[in-house]
Length: 141
Image (cartoon, rainbow, N blue to C red):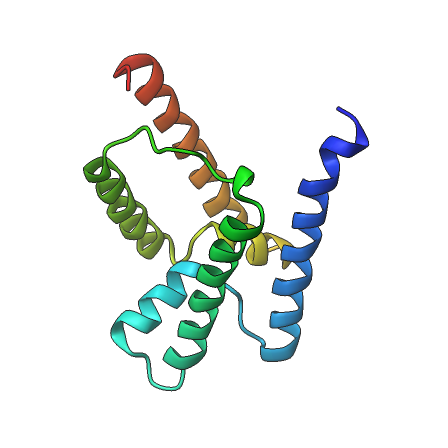
């Protein structure tokens, strides 16, 4: 691997770290997607507005990427939409059970050296690896 290959991921990581670190320093809150979605869905008093803005910003970032760098996105999706929806629901259930998602635990929690977040992120990653292995090598998906 050369430096040209690493520039994009390094820049992205620095931007994510700066954004979540700045958010934490300014508000004392961690930037987690599942908590933001939950807060918007239940209309958390005093929280729903900023959580909606957070999610809207993520959506705008995706739209911006699609407009200005479409080659970074896949040309087509090779899974059924039913499978994608079911997977999303299972991920949502899992993040509620874990008290957060990979952005909250993996980026913010590990950055704060939270043992709970380190265990949760290791569990997320091990489950993801097992799921991919089963889907590709056992189920043949």
